[in-house]
Image 1 (cartoon, helix red, strand yellow):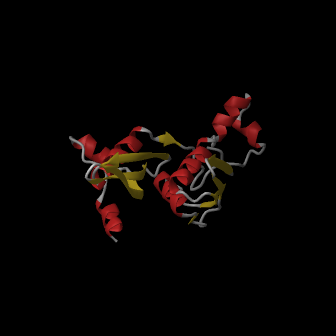
Image 2 (spheres, rainbow, N blue to C red; image 1 turned 90 degrees about the vertical axis):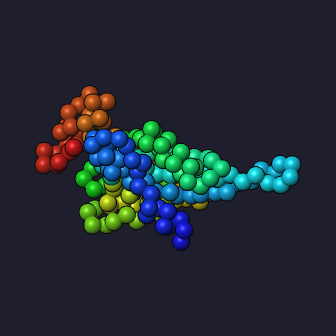
Image 3 (cartoon, rainbow, N blue to C red; image 1 turned 60 degrees about the vertical axis):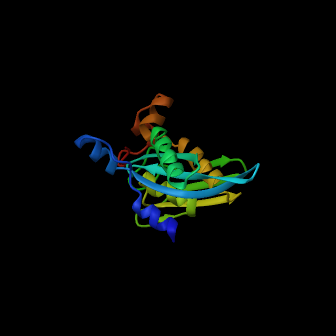
Length: 189
C-alpha cells in the first residue's frame, strides 16, 4: 500500500525554468522493486536499499536503472536520474512494435509480439511496466525462465534493442522501403 502511494506521488524531478517544467512532466516513472539489504558490522546491522526504476516518455523512449542508498527515497531518485540519462529510442509501429522479438538476460527470457489494435498490453509485471513507459498500447509478451524482475526488465530491454524500423532495415539492405515490404499499399513508417 505504501509503495503504491509513493508511486502515485512520485513524478519527475522538478527542473528550473519554463522549458524544464514541460520536459519534466513528459516522463513516466515506475518503481518496479525496492529491496532492503543489510550488512553486518560491529554492533549490529547496517541497512541500505536498492530501487529498480523504469522511466519513459510514452513516445518510444525508455530507460531502466538501479539506485542504491541508505534511504528509500534517495535510492529511487538516484535510479530515476540514471534511467533518464540512459534512455533508449525504440522504433514503434502505430500502437505496437514492428515485429516479434526475443530477449535474454541471465536465466530470464522474454518473447514480445506485435498485436492488432485494441488488444491491450498483455504482459506480466516487469514487462508491462516497460511497455507502458515506452508508450506501447497493443502487445503480447511472455516471460520464461527466471522471474527475477531485474533480469526480466533487462531481457525486455535486450529484446527491444533488436527492433529496427522499416527505413532502417531498407538502408541496411540497400533497398527502398517499398522493395523491402513488397507491396505498394502498405503504410511503412
